[in-house]
Image (cartoon, rainbow, N blue to C red; front, top):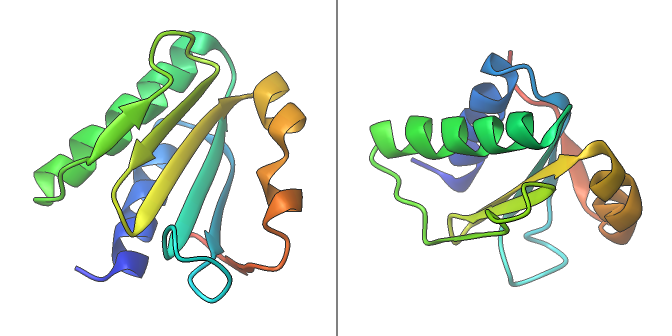
Length: 114
């Protein structure tokens, strides 16, 4: 599976659990940390956790194991690192505060598949 296919699968998992404002940002050409960021917002701390769990479940089903998970204790921002794809699941306040879209505005926005 390509890194774009992995990002699209993560976005579909987020959409399946009603994640908000799902974005895929291609950062491959501007950074060496990953090929893509997938960003989504949850409506509550429980929803943030549910979204992250669904991504981990769906990608694991596809044979893609998470390398590391950060932020599980506070549930306002959970990061799932799949090496070439990094998934960020935020609460509304945390997403607004960190504003990753602004920080990575030189990246290309890829439309998630429906």
